[in-house]
Amino acid sequence: MDYENEIRQLKSKIASYEKILIETSAPIIPSIVENTILVPISGHISQERFNMIRTRVLDYVGGHRGTICAVIDFTGVGINDIEEFDFSLLTLEIDQLNNTLKLMGVRPIFVGFNPCLVREVVQAGIHVNIETYVNFRTSLQVLLAENGQSLHS
Image (cartoon, rainbow, N blue to C red; front, side, top):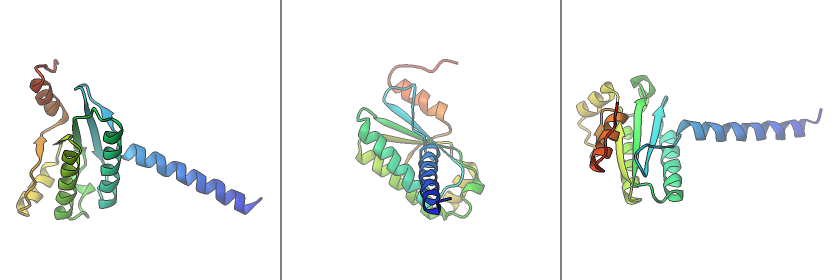
């Protein structure tokens, strides 16, 4: 078999798998609230992953100029997913994502923080000025109420 051809095919497969990983690790989902997107984050958190999330969200917002609100949902992130990530660096990344979205004219809302993470951040004396809600449903209720609408059970 031609090893060079096999290597090219394997590199092509790796590139396609990397693209799939990027797309699925930070999906962007249109919400039921008009011009609002949901960005669910789950699993391992790192600085590289935050950079990728920030890039994907900015690319989406740049291509969908009607987006006025982005709900970033950390419900799927457990304390084990961030243990090796410095809490100061984590809050810096969250703050950068918050400020980046604001500069684009998009209202950032963060939901679903793990109570252990919150306790660690507060005990470390780190201050972050972000809009937060306990979960995605609560944030949707607030956004709908601001528009004179409601979320029915």
